[in-house]
Length: 178
Image 1 (cartoon, rainbow, N blue to C red):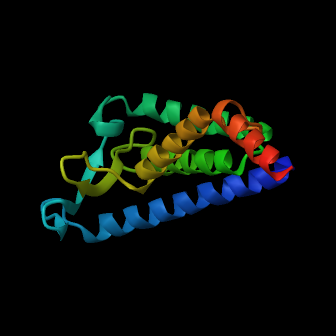
Image 2 (cartoon, helix red, strand yellow):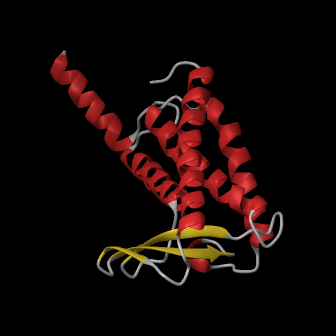
């Protein structure tokens, strides 16, 4: 359990910065090296690298509403930072750090990429089977969100406390060790 809000912020920022760096580096390489007309086959047709510029959200939903998605991403970033003062669970910090880094990674594209500031298209490049093309930031958001849902379902709370299954398990372990 994390004790100070300073250590939480440092850990949260470190995770987010690692995701952002990996996202920016991979997108820069993809834009510089991939031809949108020629995907690179990694594992047959199952896994390919293909350059796609997405003006919408996940699965190309909300195309044409980039400015709304930009505002939503900004709101997510602000909420996570404000909420971070209450965090005491390392697992919750990991999950929120992944979501934060992914949100900022795609926000960077929306702010700075063509066709215009605050209306930029996100660079996607990982294609797996029938799944829509995605990027490192998308992966981080999804993995972080799944982790947060699992923690919530199992009863591991953001403040380090436990409820439900996690509380019963902790009580059982404590009883066995007594």
